[in-house]
Length: 69
Image 1 (tube, helix red, strand yellow):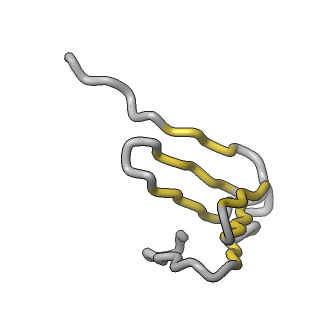
Image 2: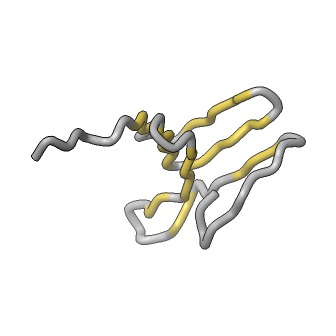
């Protein structure tokens, strides 16, 4: 009560995001406007395989946590 939903922007299909010199492609990408954090991860396909894992390029630092970028 009194709270509000987090301000996020999900990319719910395979795709990519480009920001300055960073290019990020993954099956699932979500950006939090509150924390300015982008989370990217692969998705499970219909056969149960993990596909479309995150791939990034660019000169800026990207912090990897677990199996997500």
